[in-house]
Structure formats: structure tokens, C-alpha cells
Length: 284
View 1 (tube, rainbow, N blue to C red):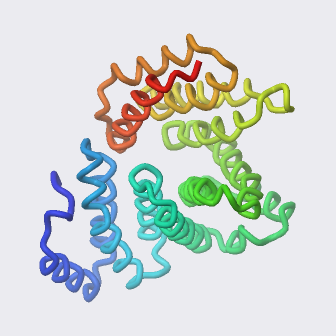
View 2 (view 1 turned 180 degrees about the horizontal axis):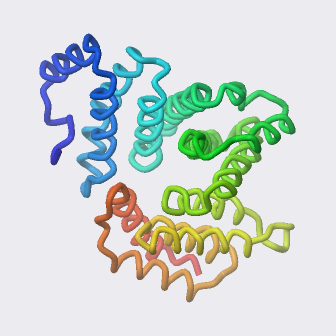
View 3 (view 1 turned 90 degrees about the vertical axis):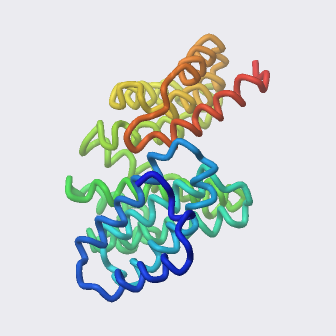
């Protein structure tokens, strides 16, 4: 699938939706949703995604409305809303709405996968941690998608201390994921932990070296093909500890790399844009 649904006329989209929503082939619907997600994540032109993604999202919403407890559809929806809001939407109000939808889909998916975590956002923190520690390999995808969606939601609500207070739960989710499978999602859980654990300088009680460890694992598990891991390593760690040599080396590697990589192409392309901007901002 070389073009996004933005090239499909509204009438055709409506017919496709009608056929899917009135059909009984749940497996085919899931495959369509997953193919849509892959087409978006493997797109080399962010502007094409920016203009076409809303049609994708409407389609996913329709599929989920027809099968509200379908875990696979909910996870695809959460991933797409998170990816779109995180890298392609600039308006704060829209990003808040989109990340809220992503988090809602992800929470519903985890609830369907593991009913003991249906109240993950509101249950007492100690019970949340204890329940999380009972999760198994089968829960990994739902745990990961919720962690990523929740982190994106917190980022867009950084002006709300109640939202920021949820970071501890997100960190618990990510830690549980790497406890179960350190290399999960080609090291993306490690990447998110690296960002979370490099927010505070050592002089103020932080532990940047712990964050560096996670960035290095993210690069190891992705075989250095996840360019966003290098960008965040530079931005979150190298800048924090004023390591210009590491910072510049990482960004130069990002700019010299081929961004095309299965399910990372869009992210890698956006990482290269960010790397160019960071090289120009004269931080050091």
C-alpha cells in the first residue's frame, strides 16, 4: 500500500466502512487495521502522513465502534493516535484531544487483556504496583502501548500537576516490560525509560547514568536502527551532562543514516528533522 487513505475519495471510504462494519470477518478487519498502521509507520514523507492520517483515524474509530472490546483494534488505534499526535500535530489543544483518545484506547485494551488492571489510573499506587507485578508475557503489548500513550498524554498536559503525577505509574509500566523482556519492541521501552530517568541532574538527586544505560540498551536492541533513540540520547542525556562530543556524534550518525526501516521509517525521518534542528540551535 503505497498511498495513504487521503487519496481515497470520501464516497469510496464510506463504502469501505459500510462493507467492513456490516461484515462478520473480524480477522480481516484486524488485518486491515494492522496494515493501515504499518502503512503509516513505514511512510517516508511526514507531510503525506500529516494530511492523510485523519482519514486513517476515522476508519479506525469506525472499526472500534463496531467492535469496542477488540484488543487488536484498540491497540492499533492507540498506536496510530499516539504516533500522529506525538510527531505531526503542533496545536496544543488538538494534541491534548488526540493523546486522550490514544490513552483511552490503550487503557481499554489492557482492561480487556487483563481485567485486574481495568482501574490502572485510579487504583491506589501500591496496589497498582503489586497488580502490575503479576502480569505475564501475554500482557506485554497492552502494557507497552498504554505506557507510550500515557506518556504522550502526560507530555501534552505538562501544565497539569495531576497529570504529571502519573509519571510514576508510567515508569512502573515500562520497568515491568523490561523485567519481562528487556529487548521488547526493539528496545523502545528502554528508550522511554532513558528519557524518564534523565529529567533531573545528578546534583539535584537524579541519576543520569541510569538513563544512559537505558539509551545504550535501546541502541543495542534496535541494532542502532532506531534513530529516535540516538536523538533522545543526545537531547535528554548528552545535553543534561554537557557532553558535546557525544551529542554531536550521535546527531551526525542520525543524519548520515538511511531512515528506511520496517515500522521505524516515519519515526526515523522525524528524528532526522529533529537532529538538524538540534545541530543549529547552538546549545553548547
